[in-house]
Length: 101
Image 1 (spheres, rainbow, N blue to C red):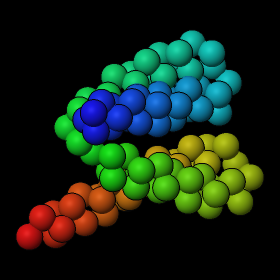
Image 2: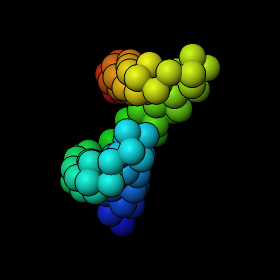
Image 3: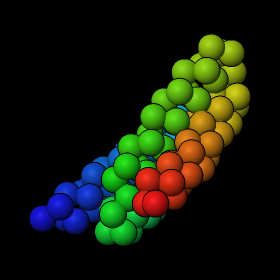
């Protein structure tokens, strides 16, 4: 049951992230494609048991988006959100690495 919930959380979080990417760049086709790809990848990460990883990435995206939004430039907003996700993904990996020991 917990594994199934992780899959649903992953599909929801990364699918929503993909759709929002399409909305930010004003492309309905990209919103659909990125939403589907995000759902597939999110389901796979959830199947592997990465709920903490997914939530940490979403927090990083929100922080990066907030910082990028302050500049007023859409391109910087997109790069800041992606950088926040990448950095928080690395942090989540390191935290999980040290928690196992």
